[in-house]
Image (tube, rainbow, N blue to C red; front, top):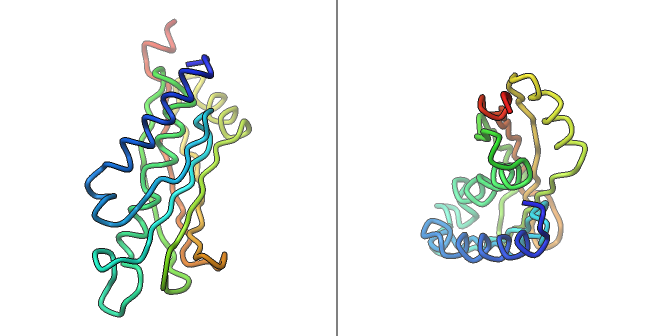
Length: 160
């Protein structure tokens, strides 16, 4: 999708749909911004009674949920329908307790996209690793998530 207007409309629709997604509503997760070019996302999560753990801080599952789909979604949008994109693995390192609102930002750059296209051009899979930090309102690190994605060019796309 190369038309900037269509991409911007798609970004607005995706943000709207994600903010109505029941698990995100229940966990207090809000997609604050998706760039019109579908290359970056900003997400926030308030501390509520629905995502608070036994000791009164952000529940770890909610922290992971707030970052789960975004790199996959951004890569799908950037690479297009000729590619298979899945989350393959993830790990989360809890650094400090989330005692209030937390935030995460995701960015997909040309270097990552070029590397994926180069590695998958012959039909081989690519397993890009990305990282996202979850920070509190003061910018302090709360958790770091490492993700491995699975990307492969669809067989019919290789033949074209």
